[in-house]
Image (tube, rainbow, N blue to C red):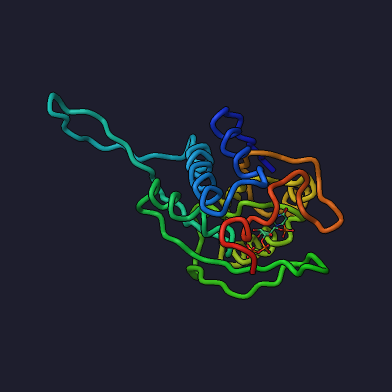
Length: 207
Ligand code: PRP
Ligand code: URA
């Protein structure tokens, strides 16, 4: 599996704000939006473009736009904080939704909703979820997408654990990972260490 860890001082500063336990919900949401902008920018590097002719005020010139805007799939709740800025950057993108809550005791994903196009053949899909911990939630999402014919999937995550990266690689699904950090590992509660805590709670408050 291809993994790209974004190495940029602005990304590192935004991630620092998100990691800091003193950062309140509002500032956390703002930092997540700003960091998502960088992650999406990196995810789109090298994406196929379509060229067409435009006229500047001075002369004809070659313009370009994305050949195929991806489907954006935020994983609720925490991925919600990434989708608006991704859609601002890619205005032609369609948006699907997956809802998954991890069971606090078993750490297994508990899916509670999905709203996706039936046919994803030939369509790039960007899954948006700040946290890749055990990888269970992302693997479930990949299964939903692959069952609909997706063959080109990008997982866009703020922080990943090596366990989650391995789970994606072992899944055999057609996925690459764009992230701002691969942390040391998971603690006994399957939280990423050092991580940033519960990304849903830090945006929206405790459930
Ligand atoms: C978090 C996070 C991922 C998942 C990662 O969601 O946003 O979806 O945990 O853990 P995993 O890799 O071990 O599956 P959570 O289940 O806490 O739900 P929330 O987004 O509603 O807070
Ligand atoms: N989900 C989170 O929000 N944070 C973690 O560290 C692990 C799972």
